Length: 213
Image (cartoon, rainbow, N blue to C red; front, side, top):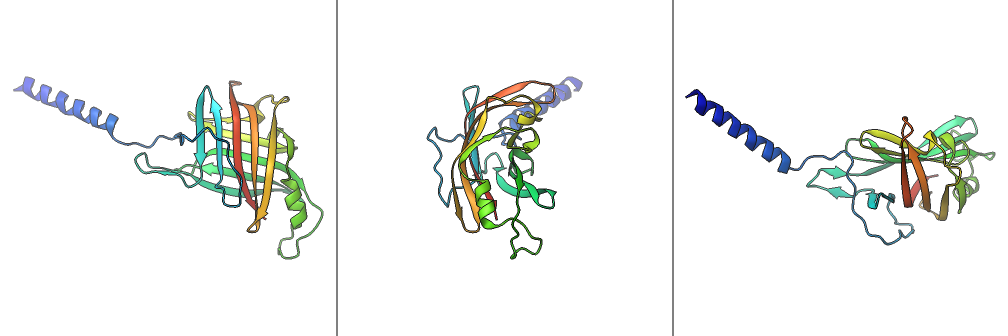
């Protein structure tokens, strides 16, 4: 009888492990397998980022849902006010646990005008648009004088600010102001580092970002 109970228990445990392995579960670092075509910028383009790492294409697309894996991406843009007349713009792509999978900070934006329609003051529209105009921007520590990229992968935070990127750049290829905000298309090729000094090489990076005025 005891032998039978042991065998039955082993059978139940084995079945449960098999069911768990085959059942859909949330992967904290999933990615949408996008196409290899370059992204196109227009006023309706969703926020997204795409890059290659070790011959694997990662593509995080705003509002993309995979119900089988319970995956959903959201976008969030905020302002980090550094002084009374300077700020950094932050764009985050979040997973359904509200974790920032990929983020970009662009700074430091120093403005001199005052938008009278904003009770708290702020930059003028022309100053705001010029901050995102097409051009080459350095990968700068903490985005003090350029751009900082961050990626959450394998439970570790990887950032351009944790190591050297002197020979790499972030390029805004085009930008478009519409619906009281600016949408831009950019490309990048850079290294991200963790706090232990390990590095990841992101290649053929493309990003469509958005910030409201």
